[in-house]
Length: 589
Image (cartoon, rainbow, N blue to C red; front, side, top):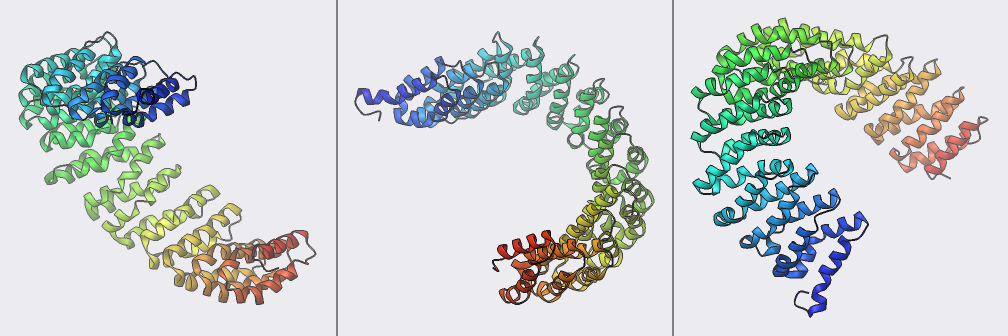
């Protein structure tokens, strides 16, 4: 199109100008999203000379339009003529990196980082680095925060004089008057440290890290903790004690819980970065304090790291450290007042059994697991039950059944029906972990007992549970273990239990397959069509409709159809209605 005569070649940009001036935001957004198509139509030269200046001049719009523009420009290198012309994209992105909306600025910085890689070292110094300087010394904090994200991408590829300038700019921003800028600098400190030469990490970064870690704003201090992980990996072991640890100790006892939370959250990474000696002397006491912190959020974050922390301890005295320092704190957390803390602990505590071995698990951990299994918070119980397999590996199924199973049975027979319901929902999970033989021996009777519970929600959940068990253990197991017991309930004097038989058949027919359904289940359903209670009869009609698709056409015509026709003339309105519905759904009319 660019090669056509004058009027035609102006067409794409004219349309774009019209659409970008339209009052409808959606239309403006769509036109920005089509930018690459327009650039292709204009060709590289006119994209550089007309489209980009036009976009640079019109950057006053809704944030979502600017966000789309910032994203598009990051993929524009080839549309402006490849890497040698990539610097043409800098002016519009520079403007976008200074707008007020954070999301737009972040996207502009992301695109600038992307295209910085496509600049040659010369272009980087001539075009990109001056842009970073302009942003870093901008009047508005918005441009200074954006600059923080750009230092690390251009630093490795510029000359040593320019490197010195970049370091100076970064230092200035780390002590900026505006907290938002210091926060941005702190968040990029670790990344910048990774591209610096080792001598400057010591001379520059450590002092900046120390200053940011004792900033008056807790939002800056907590970001310095994140940087600590990167900085610790860059320094030789002998320097860590003097250069990093004082700051880290201070952060672990910071007056703001957010900073302590960040230390707890990054604890495993810090532990790997500082090595085993410092872990033993410094991090173990710090971790104990975090586990006993007065803020629940900090205790929960630390509790989450218990297993990882213990795994990463030096092997020679791992067990001794856990038993004397960590386990006492863990014991206290089991009865914490905050359920998030208990839940976080329950999700990892089972993992300690593999670290501590069989005897310690039986003596010290089992009582804790038992206490958590009886916790009033369902999430704590679920986290324990869903991690039983790793304890099973260590102490074996017999030991487990003697200790934990009574607690599970106790919950299964709890007076509160919601507790019983929660245990039913964990049953398929337990069955998978404990295996079929153990399940049949210990838990099968429980599952059958739930089918005749006096609360309907329990009977319904028990039915659903059976279906999941059959999916896990297979149709043959169902035929031998479950089906006979379910069908036996068809003769129960209580009509609610007779109805449960029908609900079970509905749930099991598909999992058990055609043969079992036709030979064993269908005769029972057909026989129940003569039940005295209308509720049972209309559930027979519903069951036949449900299991119909599993049956073959012969059984449908010869056995099901006559029964449904008889029910369709029943004296009870509901029975008639459901029988007729089944006939039409199964196309037996």
